[in-house]
Image (cartoon, rainbow, N blue to C red):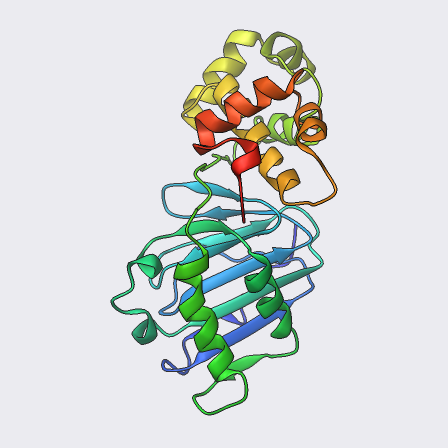
Length: 261
């Protein structure tokens, strides 16, 4: 279990009118909390889960999450990320911009990614007139313009200790032929009991979860320039490009070839 790191949370809202920057290379977790500033978090080199009061969201690699001011949440890091970048924006600067009122997970465009990298050595409060303030204001203005397409999938998760090993296995073996009859006995379930557990804990079926997981893994791979759609289809467990493409369009609303940052 990662160490709880709540020492930084009171500092976020300490000065209401300025930006706050916090980057870390350590694994961490927080309890459920809120703050008065909007939050942008980007996991460089890893993925995570975002938990709110009523939902859990998978945050893939090469995506950032926007958390509106005042929304209860916590982030759970399950992969070792090279760096976690956190930018906090004063609520007063976010008014009259609907983008900032909703939680969203967005692909990090090359522009946003480079700007986040530029803040690597900044820490703490950034006041008006201080070095970096204008750049952070520019990032705030750019987000609604370059983040038009949020990730359309909320992949559910659970704290159920019996089900989490099953989910971990699916994540780690996504390229394999995965089926309920073969999977259930490996984890001490009957097919019926595992089916019911998915429905009860996840509010979706095993097949729905697997389909969404494969598409999300496909999105991660699409954001890497060194893999083509054919490779991605087979690495996510599909026997043909057309099967992968049709499922991708069904869930995302566009073909893999149309998916852009």
